Length: 387
Ligand code: PMP
Image (cartoon, rainbow, N blue to C red):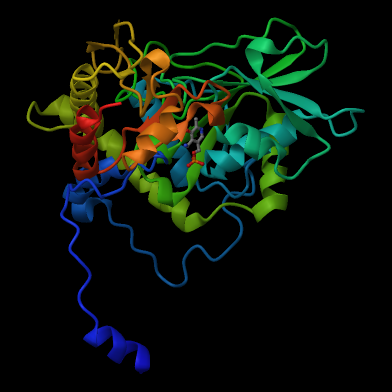
């Protein structure tokens, strides 16, 4: 064709050298590609083969409140929480979702009264996860509405408070902040895993959300789970998913079950043999190294600062450490550079600015979960920036 002959005679585009100043480093999304290298070593042990006749039915277990939840996934979730000690599963209903994002929406649906005169207020303490306001309001529901920073909520009205701990974007451990008795809590524990934070206690809240996206790094599998105390709430969450997507992909659930079992197995093996490394050993060491490198890079400049975290002992690993968050909440110091996201963007580092999280634009959020090559480029470029 004309196009191909034209391109055949056109000069080759100039080579962009790896690591050159012109390469964009995109650390806006929390895409957990960092874990890819661990899973590559696992090979066959973690491969799932599906025949054409399998997983055809809509149904998984009609006796379960969540009738589209695969029994293998139930066992894998209960086992992993027991191994890690990060959440109580006894006496809880499990609801599976297409990511914990779907479960967040299912929980809002389940907790908002259907016939109230006003939509239910939904709040979270700033800085809050940037998707909460978007997911709460994008369908302009009559059931619920985003009501902003929980620290500023003082209406004598019912509300749902989202507690994200460790928090996205700043990594701190969080508790509910609204002082009132009209609230219902949802705990988003996506990052309550021992590579990010010392595990202090098994979490024991009414509604707890988890996801493979941040625990094992399988964001593309799109599987999350909710541990729910109240049977009626679990039923309504299930109804939401039934109306929304008539269940959750079985292929993905089976894959998630295999991955979670492999993580528990890796912990058991590491306990039995000194030489074996569990998934959480691997990911903890990797995160620790990255945070060390990032703090070194930040300390070489006067322009930026990072949060500091107090040390605690992890009941799972026995290690004493401060948080190693999945995101760095970077502050541009001294007001010299103004908007931190735009400033870094000029240097081809893409991040998500404070405004998205209900915070000041002096802050920006940077993913710590990219591939090694991208993270290395970032820690080399950051100290080279001058205002
Ligand atoms: N909650 C928090 C706090 C998150 O950071 C994320 C992912 N960025 C999610 C929920 C959504 O995760 P999922 O991929 O399971 O939908």
